[in-house]
Length: 74
Image (cartoon, rainbow, N blue to C red):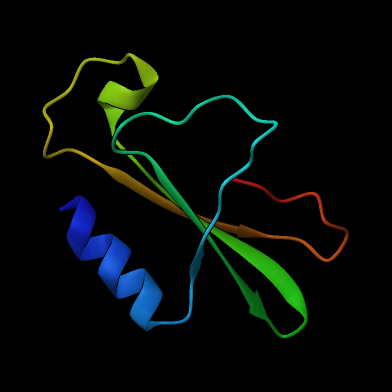
């Protein structure tokens, strides 16, 4: 599932985001950015296990956030 979404995001113009100052991401957690109409959008793919929550590995969440003032992030 991880590789499917990573490939689909890249094909659609999303760039993997790596924040060296941020906390380490979980093994499956992925973040991508893309400029849409002059605003940076963030696509966040995560799994409950990344958040130390209970859940099956096939459960996941996808969030897309953006803001004109730069307040959005993964």
